[in-house]
Image 1 (spheres, rainbow, N blue to C red):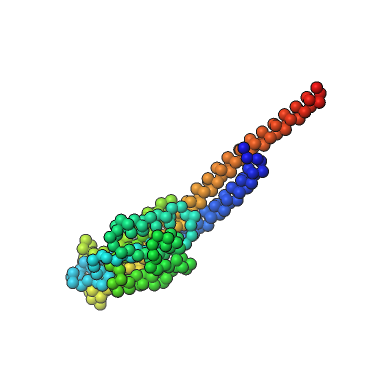
Image 2: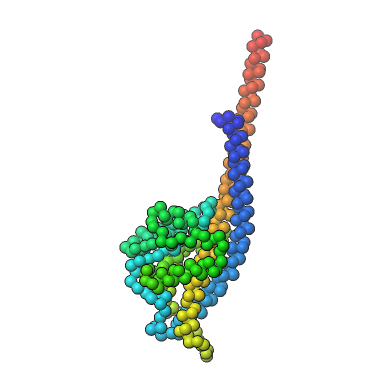
Length: 286
């Protein structure tokens, strides 16, 4: 059994760890509220914009296709992996890397795959196994639509220049603080809107429907990427809050066990001292 000093040191260490994890949990809970409000407000706008775009696209002739809808033979794929810049959030980052590697070795096993990372953790983990084409980890230092817009424009340019035949997004979709859904989403080329219902009614389009669609597509793509990053950002804080909550509970349980072990060891030490005193007294009396 460990001596009393070692047990006391372990109790102090575990208590300090518990204070840190508890503080991190409260910080993440505060940040989660703001991030959750942002993605909750963003989703209806993004969904309505996609619905409007698909409805207008359904009115157009098949020949009036956008350069962002150019379906080519898939030879070269870009996987955009969205993670976080910091750890201590459970399996949040490892799930993104695992899904990205699954695309590399599974879905696109016979294609040339490159990675584009948004988040330092995905960059550091994927770089050990594969080449990173570009990294934008600094975007989380000031997460704004303008910053994501620039990244979206870069991705759109890479596609229209023919450097990649397909671009996929891999990110954690926020459901609640305890649940994050790893999502793989096609970014480019844009999905065909054949199943969408055409916009009906006696509308006058100014400029033409084709021009409106051509202007809406870049905006929709930028919104899609921004929504994915906001989803990931909210998911990160939810995952970290949950992880720190579990860590705090585990630390409290370990501290209680150590205190019990300490009390038993202290009681045993006192009993031994009493026995030694009694034994010494009886030896003197004899």
